[in-house]
Every structure is written in structure tokens, then in C-alpha cells.
Length: 293
Image (cartoon, rainbow, N blue to C red; front, side, top):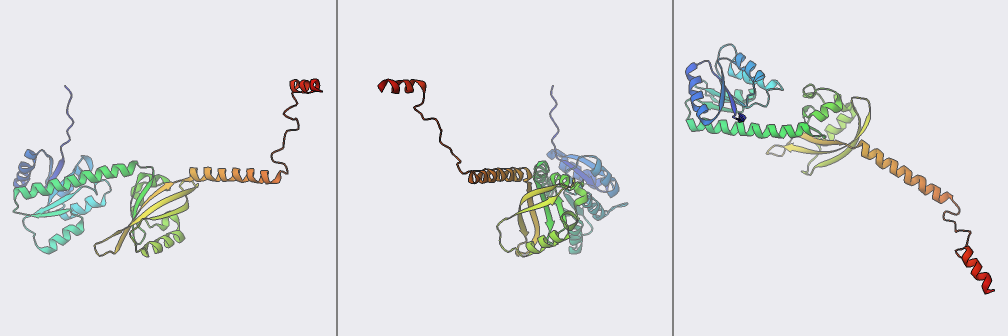
């Protein structure tokens, strides 16, 4: 009998109160979710790094490591940064706590007591978003083109494996690096200044020549777009860059060959000489001509 793959969404529940742990499990498991549990942030951090977790639901106040610090630690680690985190608290509900939670990187916040349906809606929405983003990331990582995002000051926010291979460094090492460390200070300063001046919404096309990690000059063509907030202020630059070196070299070789043919043609005084032997000079026709005379 073939075993059906377990494709259930996995949720890590973090709470030092066993009653709250059991309550959340009783809410989620009948809906088809697979749950893991931890009673402090440190244990939760270890679990999130060793098992596949698609969402974390964490209490705010806990021993060893509280929910706020757990959130910060998860979001700072490239391996767990994409996991959505829902903070839950029955004690801290004031607006300052909400602000602190979102500054720590929380994706949503739920105050106790809450309705059963409210929890399920938030969990379903965050997990679906996570799965969609994961599929998108897989597409991006498998792309042959360099795909990156940087802030308006020139610091790299995201870059895919194609970009990591081009610059010869792991992607996580490039995150946060200034653009100048990758393309040089002059080119970076020019790029940052130009992007800050962009006002329209049309994609911007560019061509450039950069040296890769092997020291090879590579010709690149790219398209960049500007991310903006609701007020229209520039927030970030997203770029897709393709290595067109082989095509460019082939085009140059063809242009050189065409130019050589042109010069050869122009230098030849008789580029298409006529045949010195008349078309009527075959033995049969010569013989016929002699008989007629």
C-alpha cells in the first residue's frame, strides 16, 4: 500500500502554560494541522531550526526566552526568517506592546481571550501566505537570472543563488552589504543617486559590464522597478539581471566578420569577374559553327 505524503501544515506552539498549550492544540489538530510544542523560546528556537515549521504561535511572557526575543531571533536567522509568527498574550494588550511586537518582526498579534474562529482565520491566512511566498522563493532561487532587492541607500535586502554564484559568496553573507562592496564605490554611488531621482512607474532598463567572482568581465542586461509606499515615496529597488555575455560576443564576432567582408569587397577592383570562356565554347557548339561555315 502506497503511503500518502503528509502535506499537513505544521505549527509550532510556544507557551509555558500547559493549559494554553493543550487548548491551542485542541483548536488546531482537528482542523488538520500538525503541531509541535515548546514551553520556552529557547526550546522553540531549537525546534524551528531542526524541523520543518510553517508557523509559530507564541506567548509573549515566558521564562528563559520570551516571545519578543524569540521573534527577533527567528527573524534574524536566514533559515527561519520567512516563518510567520503570531504572538498571543492575555496580559500585555496595550498599544505599546503591539508596536513592540511588530518592530520585533511579528506577523500578527492576538489578545486573549479570543474567539476560536478568529484564531483559525489568522492561522490559515498566515500559512497560506507562507506557502505562496515559499513557492515564489523556489522559483526565484532556481532562476538563471540574478534577482535582488536593495533599499534606497544601496544595501542588499535579498539576492538569489544566481547572484550569489556571480559574486562568489553565499547569499546570506550578501544580505545587508552595501552595493559598493559588489560593484565598486563609483558605480554604486551613481546607481543610488539615479534611483533616488526616478519619478515614474515604468521599469528601467540598463546594460552594464561587471567582473564576476572568477575575475571575468561579463555583460549584463537588467530591468529594475521601484517599490513605493502608499504616499508614493521610494522604498526599495527590485532588479532582474541577465548575463548576456555569450550573445554579446557572438554579435561582435558577426559584426567583425561582416566588416571584414565589406572591406574585402571594396578593396577588390573586380569583385565579380566575368568568365573568360564564352558560353558557346563547348566542343559541340564549336563543331557546329565550323560546319556552318
